[in-house]
Length: 107
Image 1: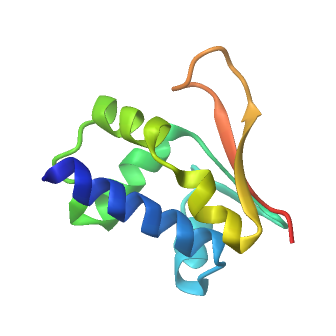
Image 2: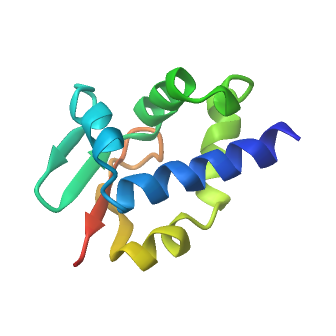
């Protein structure tokens, strides 16, 4: 099932970021759509979708609408919590697609 594989890949991606995987953080730092700052990583959902489609075949068959639904329903905060991290809204621009999100490392 494509959606199940994409959810597993999505959670694994966020676990790598939350776990401060050096290779993953390097890729994010090279992507101008993202902002990797001390203690946080800022992103927008459309940019994250494009990035993941280029990084992982699990997202090849997932259009943006399916991706958005997947990310909003998946237990990402539960997955990143053991790493001392959480996802929050950085800038609420009135629509999910226009808002900016942030992964914050608390520890």
